[in-house]
Image (cartoon, each protein chain N blue to C red):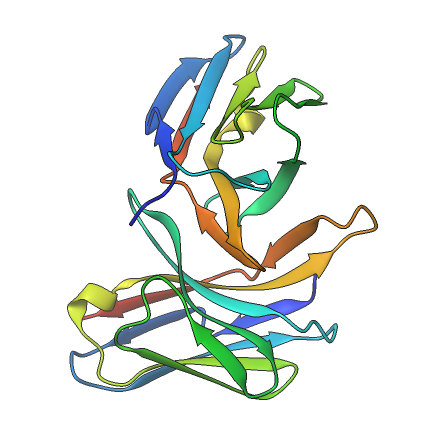
Length: 115
Length: 110
């Protein structure tokens, strides 16, 4: 357990409304990630952060923005939600072990339905 | 662009059977990982393979990294209902960025 929480855990919203998902970590990890998971696609990287106010785009970043104003929180915003953004969203942190191999630890996920 | 293709997509077997899941790519990876995900939870790392040809065992699970570091396999011996879940391979394409495979959903019935 890497101390990752996500909120909300479930959300239903309407097309065109803004939505913000929050990821909170308690162990001061530098790297944080947002993924979406859809059937047949595994997990796809949306955005990631390598420090406070340092973020970069992932594979499927269109329609999403992120912010990280403090180490423990990484926010994902859908500026104007569309039905194609219905998905399960996972936050993750990255930790390097004593063998210098990285491990990503994932939060419990947020299930978003856009009607 | 999906760099990692897994097969099969879905596997339904009886307890005690053996199975193999494949993860293939045209790209070379510095390391490759396997995760398992249970319903309603995030993926959990099972293993990391680093060296081409490497074989790692985790109880009844055997992981192999291809010699050219483009593919990997997961073999489960004598599957149990507790092995049920979604299995995902993942590889690092750049510094700190992980690409996931398409996933294999395994159902083991008693």
